[in-house]
Image 1 (cartoon, rainbow, N blue to C red):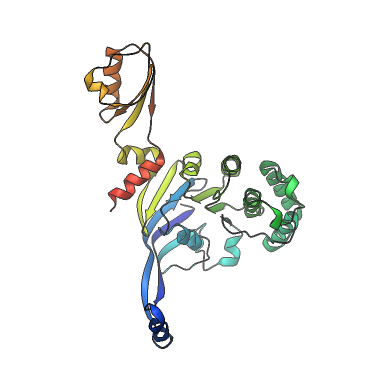
Image 2 (tube, helix red, strand yellow; image 1 turned 30 degrees about the vertical axis):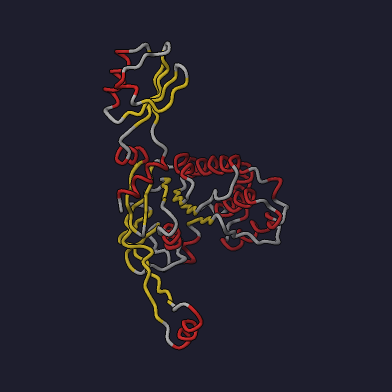
Length: 323
């Protein structure tokens, strides 16, 4: 049985329209016209316990809408959604004790309170037993290096410090599922690496299921084996990153370290992308094993490295093919 089951999920919003100018503003006071906007148009996916899944797409694709439905914040227009055997928006009070949610641009901490007091308030809200809370807090403080921040008011934290405290606050009650919506947005490289390392740790050690939405595809490559790609409210792909690459990008970069400066045949000169002395990068659009066999039989070679295209390029190819 899947921990998260989503079938035919749809969400529509009704938006008021107004004609431009002063005349349009006056008319809208007496007669409003509306149009329906479909944020989700039949999303399907299943996630098993302990999986860490990337959920990606451009702005307006429907990622945050999906997360809000899964978190019980929004009610869908249609379809089916069951998380831990519960319909999220129907059993909100009991359901929120099973999940943690982090929105990168928002905080659930109290702005003027020290961090540790926010944690204490969350303990009361989630009714976490004191001994269990102390154990969980001590583990989170150590893993995220929060000791210097506990007595600092939230408003005095940097963005990176606040995000780490928000992630800790979402895990204090030891949820089984963690929904992360742009958790590393605006963070510097060092803080990103720290946050990514922590997410891996709690997924591995606590068996926490993670659904991650992000525009930073570096997060996806660092954390997720499986990725769901969504655009315009429709699921375009649900597969591993390697499967995505194989399906949508039919070329690889082959970096060859030659034993000496090679005199390349014309057929191979056309494939050169970059040349740095005896180190040359080739574009391979044919069968990779045939290409390597040709090169090793004709030239003196010290080393060969095969590079896969970055995930950004794969996703771009996928978006283009869906138009």
